[in-house]
Amino acid sequence: MDNYKKRIVDELLSRKLKGKGAVLIEGPKWCGKTTTAEQISKSILYMANPEDKEQNLMLADINPSLLLKGETPRLIDEWQLASKLWDAVRFEVDHRKNEGQFILIGSSVPADQNLISHTGTGRFSFLMMRPMTLFESLESNGSVSLKDLFASKEINGTNKLSLEDIAYLCCRGGWPRSIFMDKDIALDQAFDYYDATINSDISRVDGIKRDSIRAKNLMRSYARNIGTQASIETLKNDIINNDSFSLDNGTILSYINALKKIFVIEEAPAWNPNLRSKTAIRSSDTRYFIDPSIAVATLGIGPDDLINDLNTFGFIFENLCIRDLRVYAESINGNLYHYRDSSSLECDAVIHLRNGDYGLVEIKLGGDNLIEEGASNLIKLKNKLDTSKMKNPSFLMVVTATGNYAYKRNDDVYVVPIGSLKN
Image 1 (cartoon, helix red, strand yellow):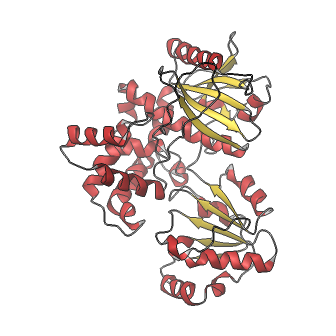
Image 2 (image 1 turned 135 degrees about the vertical axis):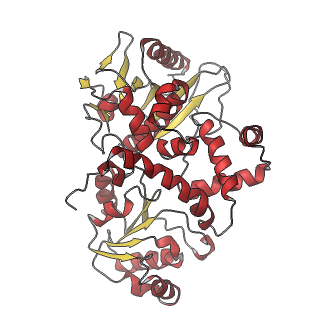
Image 3 (image 1 turned 120 degrees about the horizontal axis):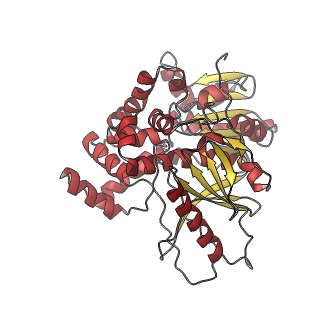
C-alpha cells in the first residue's frame, strides 16, 4: 500500500514468523491488523467476505485443510468465525515442519472455544496489536527512545505538540484510517466505534444478547473510573447513582468480560516488587480502554471539553500514554504494570523487561507542580524497593503532555513529553 504507515509490530511479526509455524495477531477491530499482515503474507483467505462466507464456514466444518492451501505465509482473516480452523492449522504446522506458514487474525476471542482441542503450544506465537501510537502516526518525533533509557544513554529530545494538540489526539485516537481524515471527520470515528460496540459487537462476541443501554451505562461508569482500581461494587454504585439503573455484580462482570473479548478494554495488572517495608501492595488491576478515544466517545465529549476540564483530561491523557507505553514496551520484550500500596503511594506505569530491568513512570499533563509531584512519587517508590533482592530501576521518568524539551533533572528523574517518545 502506498500510504501504509509502518507499525512497530511489523518487525515483531517478521521475527515471530521465523520462529513458529503460525502467528496469531489479536486486537480491536479497525486497529490495522489485517493491513499489517497483508504486507508480509503471500496468499489470503478472508473468512468474512460476504461472497464466500457461507462456503468458507461449510468447508471449515467438513474439510478445513482446503482453506489452508496457498502460498505461505497464508493469512487467514477473522479465523475465529470458524473455531475448527485452529486445530486444522496446528495439524498442518506439525506435518509441514516449516516455520512461517500461517498468520491468523482475530478481533475477538472465539465464541465456541470447546471446538479447540489443543492450545497450540510450540506451534503458535501470539502478537497483540493496538491502535497506533503517536510515534506510528508520526505525531511523536521519536527523539527519545525507551530502549535508550534502559541503556542509560543521554537523551536529547524535543516536542512540538501543544496541549490543544494532545486533546485532539486523545479524542481522535490511534485508528489508522482516521489519521488520513479531516479533523472534524476523524473525531466522528470513535463515536461510530462506540455505537457499534454497544449496539452489536458486545453481543456478537459470544452470542449472548446484551442490552445496549446497560452496555452504555457500564462503559460510561468505566470511563469515569479509568486510571483507578475501581471495584465491581464501585462501578455498580456509580451506575445506580448516576443513571438509576440497577445491575448485579455478575451482570457487570459479564459485560466487562465481553468488552475484554473484543479488546475494547485492557486493564493494567499490579506490579509486586520486593519492598524494604511491610507495606501491603494493592493487587487490583487498573482500568483502561484500549484507546483513549473510546473513553472520550463514551463520555460524549471532545477536545474543547478536555481543555476546560483538566481533571478529566489528566485521566484521558494517562490512558493515551498507557496505550503507547504498552506498545513500546512489548517491542523491547517488556510488559506494563501499575503499582499502588496501602499507603496510597502510586506509580502509573512500571515497564518490566524480560531480563529483569525495569523503569518507573509517572504521567502528568505538565506544569512545574505536577512534574514535581510525579518526580517525588517516583523517588519515594525507588527508596521503598529492596535492592538487595532486585535490581535498581533503570530509570525514573515523568511523561508529560507539554514541554518543548525532554531533559534529566538534578535528581536523575527524566521529564519526557509524549510527543518526543518512541520505542
